[in-house]
Image 1 (tube, one colour):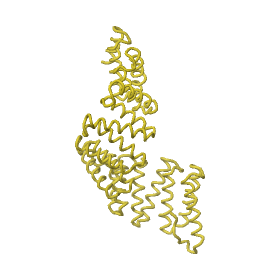
Image 2: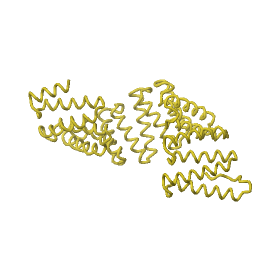
Image 3: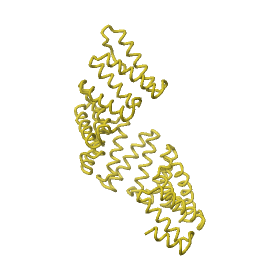
Image 4: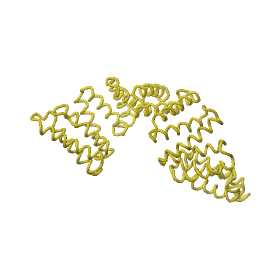
Length: 383
């Protein structure tokens, strides 16, 4: 319908008539909402913006609306540097024409925050998200979805700057508002609960993380089902929280459930499946179940070599874990072989001066020195 209206108005009114430009703009919206971002960006928005600026001037509200939608389309296309330039123009224009507290101005500020954050310009992104969040809370209230999204963006920007305590407080605030606005079982709410749990895991606040991970898991089981990928991610996260509190039996049960579900849903060689097996191996090792832990680590190593390559840091990490489990079973020659392999493959893939390669080389030297100084070879293993 938009294509027909655009074509008819171009013939009847001309390319630069306001009604024709409105049809071009509407067509761009229709394309974007179908995920046809490239067509929307290249054919519609750029054409419309150029034509609107020529016909109406750079500060006309229709021009600024078109400019803002072009910025949002560039964000969807992950063309963040171009999105930043367009969003800055839209924000400056809307501040000038509409004022700093207008809803459209705050939308442009939030969009600019997204463009900046995705370029790792986290300090500037924080400023934009604060601007948008404060204005939206004043205009729309704390429980409006747009206010919550700006608050969420602010929390992520704080986290990326390692402002951990403020990030957690901000995220908790956003979560409380989201639960009230959308309900406890809404996908956005559950995603926020999960992200807060992961944030607490990163901060090593494992008791708090366990509470959030249990909430995320229960909600995702109800909303998404037992076998959904997001549910299994929450199962794995809960295992991490439990394992780091030395609740190894419970952690093992969680990791087994995550592994079985991920294998059935995603396949044995999927990175999420391999992560679940890796975590399960760690829980088994901490309980002294060395043989089963070794078998799991071998499975992870084979999968990561196929998926990531022999010199990938995650592959090397698995080799080092194998060293420990082999050593604790008295398989000293096998442990030495794996250590040498970690050093060789790390230097080939990462270079001899890379941090992981240097650490592995140093650990191998300590290992060989310890073995050489003991007649039985039973010395403590460098970690």
